[in-house]
Image 1 (cartoon, rainbow, N blue to C red):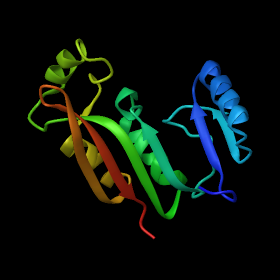
Image 2: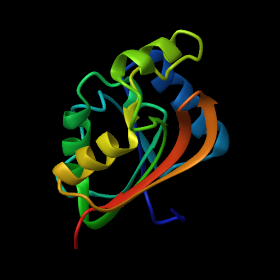
Image 3: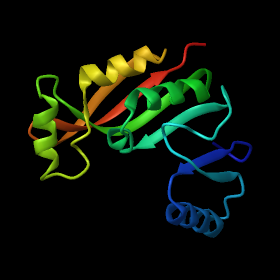
Image 4: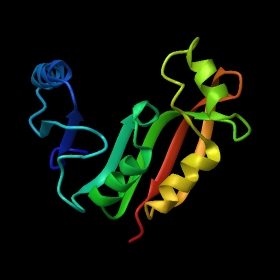
Amino acid sequence: MGPTGRAIGIDMTDEMLALARRNAAEAGAANVEFHKGTIESLPVADASVDVVISNCVINLAADKPAVFREIARVLRPGGRVGVSDIVADDVLTPAEREARGSYAGCIAGALSFAEYRAGLEAAGLVDVRIEPTHAVADGMYGAIVRARRPA
């Protein structure tokens, strides 16, 4: 983001916000801010963000359509999304995904490739790319998800 950019961190827990603030202070990062909130209701103004980054959080959200709408809402026209998340093969049912979650944490709520793509596109995002990076369970993958808000 460089010296003139700004990073905004969002977390729903006081403990993680305190840790983030300590880490930023230790790193001497002055162009960062942290807010308490949820991924389904971001405390950020409309069309105010160039890039949304999320690391294995969307699969934990109960209301994924709300998450995708929030991402689209806060992105500036032309803004981009970069997500690391867990994604399931399209043939796996929600019950099969949940069963895999019982032995590999944080994957029971994973969307399938098609569901992830459809959710982002329904929120108005385009150029959706979902690239699996590694298997985390049978039919479940760590993936990099990219999309952008139209200019």
